[in-house]
Length: 156
Image 1 (cartoon, rainbow, N blue to C red):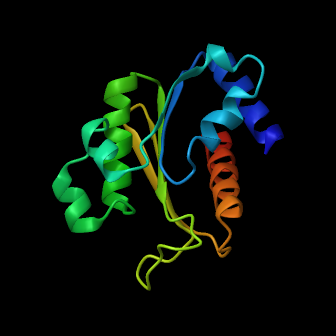
Image 2: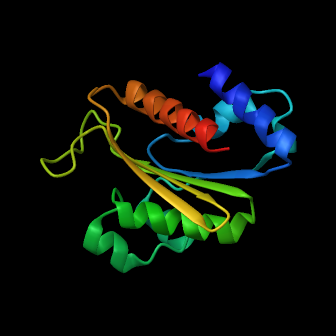
């Protein structure tokens, strides 16, 4: 994971791009992974941990109706999180993560390991739905960060 983070920070520095994160189920692990890399201060703009529905609504301005209709772990919530983070942070790249890290909290429709990753670069938005098979919280969080790093390193 450290190698992927290092690669990303180098690319962002090279391209003079800023990145921001709104994390839920990863609890700041992505921000921590990036800021553990020397030179990240040149590219890391903002990291928010919007763990509760209330902070998603109050800070990220996710409409209450999205959370009540689709849930906090949904394509729609992830999209709203990344769009509004982009407005707040003004970074070139905005990333949102929302999911169920477990080991509890899953349902048949939304199992433990369901994680959405939203990436906004310019006007392009990608929402990636992942279902990690593990039921271990830390494993799911690490898999989410690693998956994001693989995706972003391919894109930029």
